[in-house]
Length: 185
Image 1 (tube, rainbow, N blue to C red):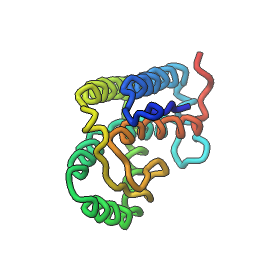
Image 2: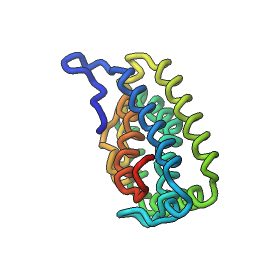
Image 3: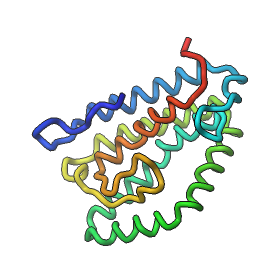
Image 4: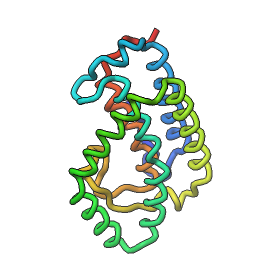
């Protein structure tokens, strides 16, 4: 379960909770891959068109896109609200091509990327996110923009930098439940 990031009544973001979420996901990703045999990874996942290996890559992809999402929310967060609203509506109009690219990218990455590369990439990405989060100011964390809500069930109409930091772990936890892997050993 994902813990809340905002402390009650303060409106401040608890960075340590976000760090803990990132680290928990990293450890779970390692445990999932360590427990899975090649046949387990080729098995169909539950509720997706991907196999377990492809779904694991898709879960990793949620963290990989964070750098782009953070750049966008920082940039749009300093612009008039209507600019990001227009951009989100434009992206929503392109949902079908996005879905095709999202599916194909996860299928290809999950089919071709060796397990050790996925682990190394996940680790490097989490380290970079930890460092970036440490550099964020309280003002940075409150910047926000409108998002294309048709692209992902965890995108809300308006999201702050703090919300964006939570997105990949929400995405990870949702898809983790769709894996059909054995319990970690």
